[in-house]
Image (cartoon, rainbow, N blue to C red; front, side):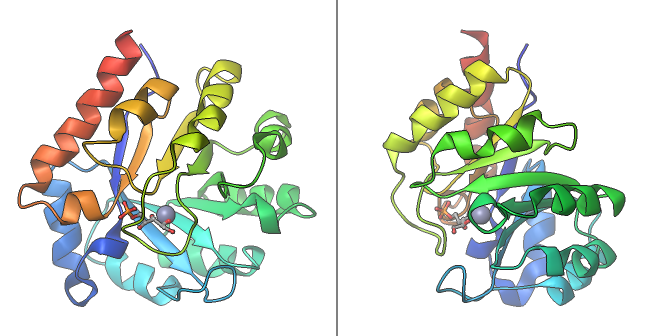
Length: 225
Ligand code: DX5
Ligand code: ZN
């Protein structure tokens, strides 16, 4: 048996004006996690949501809120997001080279689960120390598009990183994010990803439950091989 499949619809593709009902709908449709894209308009050109929105949503759901921090200064977000009720806190390695240990330590001390993300152009070796150290993250998020926007095309060349990670760390949570859907899930699942973020493919389909179930089946079937 492999690492448990976690299907995480990206709420970036939801109707933000109805965030609570969109979250309920996804959980009813079989989602394990809700992926929350926090963008600061600086690390990435887009600006989305922050702690106040997480706090509002938390009042309406007990779901695991998988927060993906596309921000230049993740350390500043630890305290506010913990207070707001975030569950996972995944920061980018590109902006945390000097302070990742402090960051991981603080995330854990606030009761959140630490993860590290890397952009398509960032070599996988950069996250090894964060996975192996005594202070370590619980998940690596391999970006399969350039972070910033939903609806982009999956980059298959990022799969080498997933394969390398899975070979080296059989029980690590490996998340993929960007362009995942029925036509790309098999390549990501067979490379070894177990946490699947999907925005436009889930919200853009008239039957999101069917898409979520298809993503899960692909992960589970790949693990049997
Ligand atoms: C992109 C975000 C993703 C995005 C994925 O920067 O990190 O989570 O919402 O959306 P899709 O699945 O549409 O590529
Ligand atoms: Zn994301």
